Amino acid sequence: MGESAKEKQVYELEHFALEIRRQTIKELHSLGSGHVGGCMSIVELLAVLYGGILRVEPRKPDWEERDRLVVSKGHAGPAVYAALALRGFFPLEKLDTLNRPGTHLPSHMDAQKTPGVDMTTGSLGQGVSAGVGIALASRIAGKNIHVYTIAGDGECQEGQVWEAVLFAAAQKLDNLTLLVDRNHYQLDGSTEEVLPLGRLEDKLRAFGWNVFSVQDGHDVEQIYRVLSETRGRQDGVPTAVVLDTVKGKGYPAAGRGPNHHMIMTDRDFEEAMRELDEEEKRLDAGKEAAGCMR
Image (cartoon, rainbow, N blue to C red; front, side):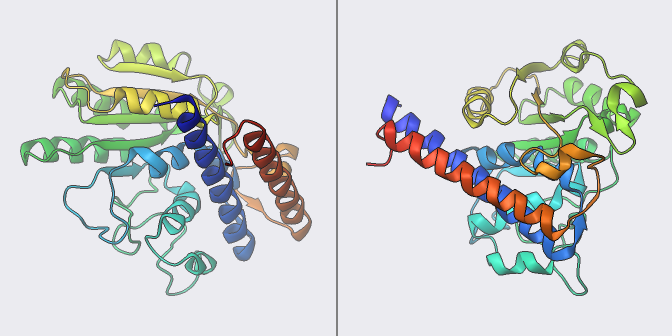
């Protein structure tokens, strides 16, 4: 890829991430509250997945040859819904129905209700096992698909996660990538205060996985490079990517107190929208100066 094409791709992914963040905040504001912190920390990861890594067909969400995404931290559903709507899986206005009676967008994701959602999740610690099962079943069926699983770092304290990690390595599931949202916080405080995780990369490597780190989990260029380079490996070893992120990234009120589940006031919403508008102006100005807007 030439330098200008690469810059254009980064620009488009950054804009996609900004719009996912904007639409996520809008849908949470329409509800009045939600899991702001965990949604905001995976926005850039979702932009890269749905903007260039995942092989999916929005008009055919049940396409059998599609890649699969299991979002084990199911409370981040609103961010996933925003990405799906922006990709065309369902109309954008449906985001306003989040967690309301009769909605197809429940607070935690339900594969029976939402087009594009591959696995019902929400019970933390179980999604990794589901991703492993899907990857194994896909290989047995001879399908050429890749399975991605997003897990929070807090849920990596669950024993079931490590049983799944051990099993995936034993089964040589190189069609599986585990993406750990290492935002360093969980419901009741920091992960290191609640139950220290130490060096997750070292633990995963000791369990027999290929392990990569993204030092800035909000840098779409870094994320895209790692995921594109690791996709399609056929070495009989599953892949894990640990992304260092900020819980509540891009929502200013999240930095002023607990942000696992927040009431979203009109003032906080308006402040976030102003900052996103300014960020969009900065992106456009920077890319125009670099010649990417021609």
